Length: 183
Length: 55
Image: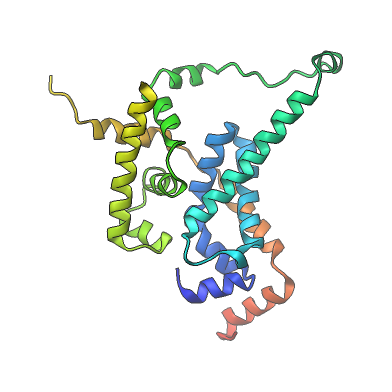
């Protein structure tokens, strides 16, 4: 992340913004998918994340990390979507739903979900939610995008040592959180 | 049978959890949306910069 690109992106240059944020597009999408559990919604939310980040990029402080900042925006957008969906479900009376023939989305897990629920994956997913945003972002880049430590360091504008220690700490914290979730 | 270290299980679980294809449509659409959002003045300046190394 060069200072020049940052300056250009802050002035509203789309190409510079895209170059800076592209390494995080997968992380943003995966987080939206994990929160919303719906591909099309996740795609919309992830796009909205990037657009909102572009519009407010002037407020991005270089002290914070771009990946963590994007992660936070994505998280908040998904929370808003979930809250709106929850309110809509609460407001709609059951009678009205029957009259219109509307079939609310089933909360029943799909066969795949049932399979996942029986596995370690679900426990890890729950445990991940308890980690700080920065740790979740780092783990997503490492395990989702298969970035090397050096690539993460470049994208997050961190030193190699910081990335290594932060990831090591994230894994330790996750392991502890998994143990707590299992209890 | 030798028990595998816990970190291996954690690695596998993380890899499985994050194993998601990122849709190409999304990759293209957020770039297009950002480009559309860019003000025309900035876009022109950006183009001059690419062509002439100005700005």
